[in-house]
Length: 184
Image 1 (cartoon, helix red, strand yellow):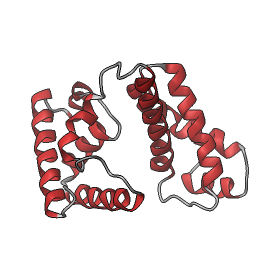
Image 2: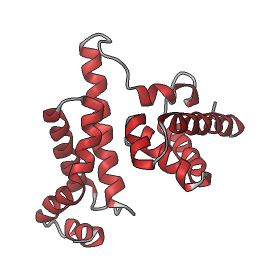
Image 3: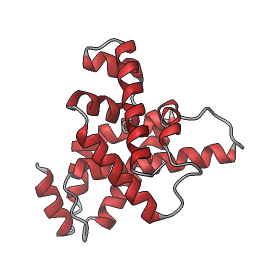
């Protein structure tokens, strides 16, 4: 079962491809949603929503990486649900620490329109492509997969302090890069 075969089967509207996608990448997607929401039922709902979104969008979309595409859909759904739950509680609950760390790297006032958001995404992808592999991996684990510092340290063989320092430097470089690109 390869991603290419799953994509082909999705384009041919074969529903069994969704089960294979869930088997292949569902655990990763659910773990990310769980880190955001801290609720297994809500995380599972986000995975199911992600599967439905894949079903609805793959034809005509043909993602280069089905894993990244599916995980991003689930992650975005979980973040939307997290924000909605915080609104319902009138600001209750702590903000996600990993995303708070990136606060000074975001455009002031937020990105308002889709064109600006796409440009920012492209520039961040350019920045990530320039990072050494280890730093890029740490950055993605923290800010995309929302892993805890201790979890990243254990996986990477680094100390918590080393991970924190490398992430701090990567955030500073990102901020400088975005300023240079006139996006901050």
